[in-house]
Image (cartoon, rainbow, N blue to C red; front, side, top):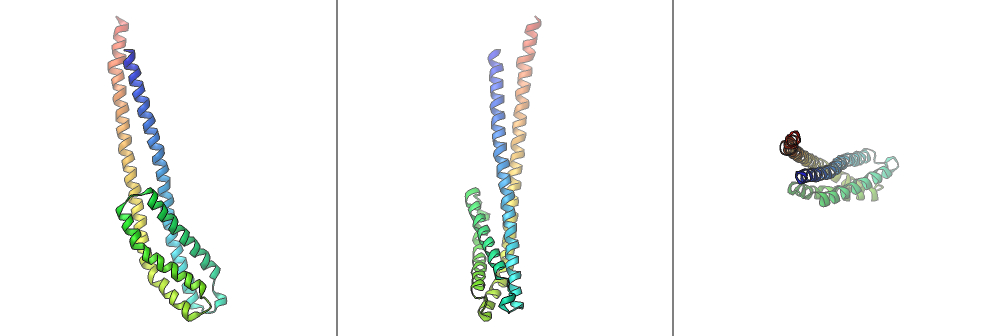
Length: 197
């Protein structure tokens, strides 16, 4: 009788520990998903800001009026975020769809980066810089479309993870209930009957 009680409680505590550990890792993973979606959202914002600054340059061909330091700062953030996004994807996800989307995004990312660098380096030469502005404008919409798909895919993966956690929690809770029923039916009730006799 004592052995049944001990084994039941050991099983219960092991299941509880495993459940809490997995729940902790899932919360950590979910926190990472939120950060990744925010980084991807910032990428969209940065490319729009780069385009806006490039268009401002095109409208005001006077180099003194152009905010080159703002373009340089936005470009740096854009490049850093892209590297963080790729690094996060490589280390935390193994998803074919994301891999395809990143491969599809890469040429537009590179063209926007190179054109931004070219515009920054040649902003005093209007004819040369105008070519870079055109390149930025031509690649912005394709970049944004693919980046939107990447954000949606990250959100889908996060939702899949949440669904997995819910299913696992139901399984663990069912196991807890079954163990308690076992303890009640096969340990406590028989123990009470023995005690009454």
